[in-house]
Image 1 (cartoon, rainbow, N blue to C red):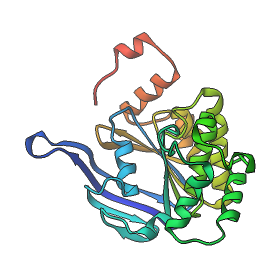
Image 2 (image 1 turned 90 degrees about the vertical axis):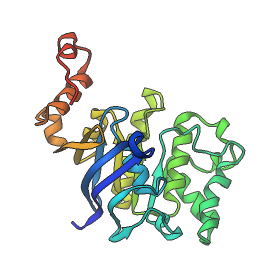
Image 3 (image 1 turned 60 degrees about the vertical axis):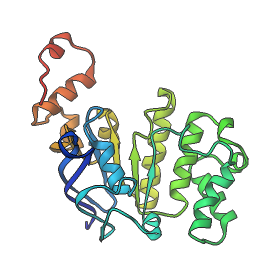
Length: 260
């Protein structure tokens, strides 16, 4: 399959001069059309910063980014967002508290001057499992899982080819997380979507993704298939440490952890 996303030598720094922090350091990867690709690592490893550069939220980067066959600069034009959309970690903070679900979903349609708003809103609410009774509710009238479904609906309403998913279930109750992950998996199959999923949870990427890149200190230290991860066969010692930590607390293992 053709690559939907190509990233080569991506660098992102915060600050200037001697105080600058290199948050992303020479990251390169490709994602095929229709693939689900995971970026995993500890907090501060740079994975969400990669996603913000891909989405255009952070324009201050160097390197090469190609999305949907087109080279991207730091600033994106309006048409980019019909190809690529992002779902954020916090469903409480990503929805306008004083707008109804209907208003939230209509806004991108108005920006892009797309017709048949009523039909599009109805269809996308059905697609995420909410339905018409949620259309005129406000975010505070919804549960965390329902808010995240609205956020997914907002990302889908322009019919993009790519979804960038930044810890899409980490702010939700454990009982709701599986529902949202299953929804995302179904939507990808139905719509032929390409995913880049950022998470610190190895079980989530093993379930959602075909390939995984492990990040540490702004760099990709290993790429592996989900099958190798499930078989506990990583090559890099940092990945092995992450895997050991994900299984449960082991005092002996913790005492042998190293900083790579």
